[in-house]
Image 1 (cartoon, rainbow, N blue to C red):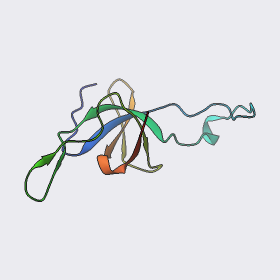
Image 2: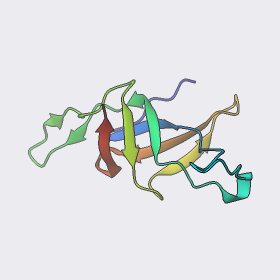
Image 3: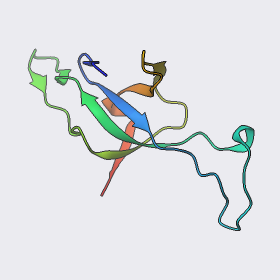
Image 4: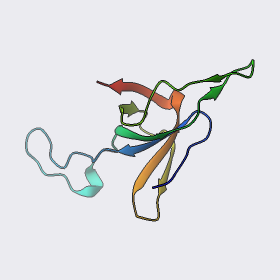
Length: 96
């Protein structure tokens, strides 16, 4: 994978959706919730402020993040890897 996001955009690899409920019921693919957690795989240079300075992003490669359910744009690489490109402001939290 060789994707470099521009500006304040971040490339995220979504984590797999749970295949079982807490009660042990196995879910088919059509019933799985869209994942909202992922791992940051690439980060842009940052947001350009009104005075022309670049504000460095808060997230870094390797961070586990929580993002909005319908955030960003989904892409598939040549290798078949599914990724999500979001603006940094669409990331809700860093999971520690």
